[in-house]
Image (cartoon, rainbow, N blue to C red; front, side):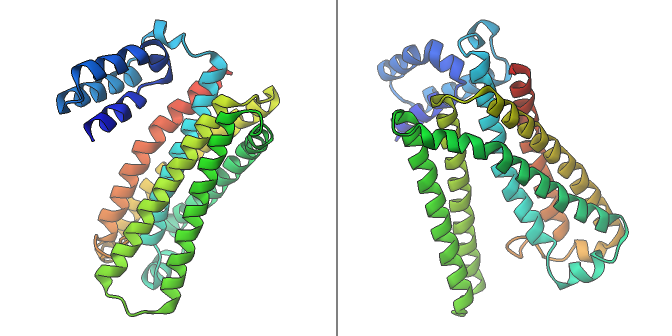
Length: 295
């Protein structure tokens, strides 16, 4: 178990560091053992490598590769951001919210703006990713790495669709399950969905590094990544406006237990989702900037 944790910690280092020091670090871990202290040191080193990269080491990765890594990072951030947005949607649904919040005013404008920006970000993801996916599929036969990436992505999509169909069937069957069991099922689906989304992002990263991509396709994907990052920042701002308007204009509604699992109050739930969105949008903006700069 500790050996696996050490391998995961090594995999968290930036690609440039793994190319320069990967064999040495792996040999060091093998010689010194995979103790908890060693794994912790590796995790701290990975964090330092991301936060304070050494220019000499960064040269191990070509500008074109940095561009592709930035695109994959934006995709991963959007996947995680989407689940925070799903939590916001679940928190602000229901008859009480529809009756009190959709009547107009600042909170209504923020809600509509969030929905429109989410649509813009989703369309940008599809527009930027579609040519890359087609390029990867065309090269799966002669490039084993691209084939493995396609299989990983396909498996994640199939698992997500299967779990979603099962969830819908359980919901429509009206089996009379208790609230606790229903919450457990929803939590399990959420964890699986997040795992599948992350798996697709990892597959995209591996595929991008394994295939040949025309320059115009990379330019399109880079522009779409910038749009996605800007949409995320704008959604964060509007979510903050929504939260302030909810607390100021509808204090009773803000205190109702209307979170994704019906446990936290709406105010606490939206606050947590806003914090998650901020934490995700920052690396997304940095990744998009890195991709544009590498272009």
